[in-house]
Length: 265
Image (cartoon, rainbow, N blue to C red):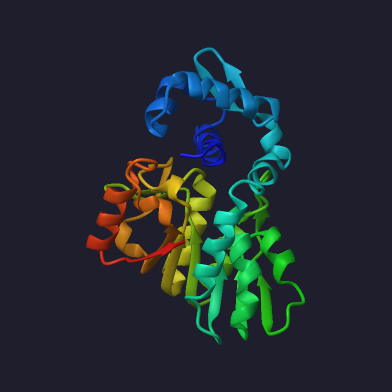
């Protein structure tokens, strides 16, 4: 697993803990498949960026995350991979579709590519995606609204859920924090998980997307079983058992659940 991939997943695992609770170095090493020394070095990097706070034997999420650090720190990681994922997802969307676009750093790259599939009606669940799609020819942009989650600028809460309940979509592009052979799709935030569940219920087809580091990961809050999605887009590294031991068995479980697999080169 590359350094950027590992930092991304480490940050999400720390931030996925309940407020004030730590995740131990030993647990992170086990989840990531690396040494405890490597985990300590990575936590030092994240602490210098103000994203985590080191405590005895582990780390907790830093308050800087509530001031925009989470998304801003991650958006530059794995940019080339996310560009490829964005293009692969956009290629699965038919012109004329009504699309619900999830929040997340990867779906920002999807937003950049969707203009090529115009005309589209696109409802967005993040401020970042709204900026990318505003005033693009052939794109009718809907901003779902709700509470902007600090640090992520994703729309969550009762207002977002009520809005989604009143709409119907052809496609839901779902970004996901973890995909596990047994525990299915999961997220690091209860708020984000609730919005994703609403999106799944309101869409005729769901395309899930995540980079290879999310395979084999069980995040804090379960979103749905594997067969809730119709297609899954990830990068080709997910099929490499050396760099991503959790990848191949998770891909096998997805195929057994009837999910189409698309590996972006």
